[in-house]
Image (tube, rainbow, N blue to C red):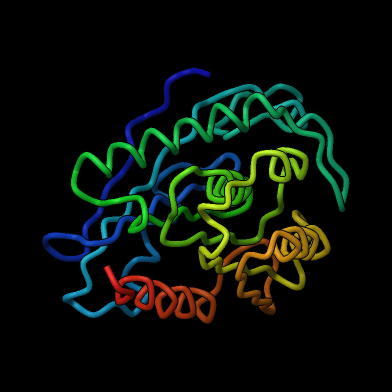
Length: 226
């Protein structure tokens, strides 16, 4: 997989005690979710390090091979399914794992790291979080799906059996159908993981109500016993 641009990093206060690795969607970049930070409603003393990686630029089959930032290739799609490049998913998971290791070296243990993502980035968040061999602080999966249920089922790691998951989807999503989000939710529930499911009156996007809910959820993770 080609090299990507370095991640964007933002700390909400000095000496962060929690890191959030937030992955953008197909065709976007690390700047995409930077503007939500002031909208999360965090207090001035809530110290979180947000890391916004950039996906590598690769040819994407469903777009005629046009090169764009993507966490993996999508070979075919319809309203309720995707055929994806599993090798690309694993490569992107490795990129996220390298960021987790980097945070460990900076003094943030894995159990204080959240993996978040929107759409294709959310698919990597689900995959990385549910298969990671060390416990994480949480998973945020927005307007997304599980790209390879087989990979999740065969490589699911019990270290994250009790890791809290915030999942949300737009009821009018015409890019990743609500049923795909519900299927991902059902897969996670079948694994016995604690998932909080939200739906909002929106299309393939985020809205302020959702962002405020994420902010409250993040504060709960910050305040959990260290």
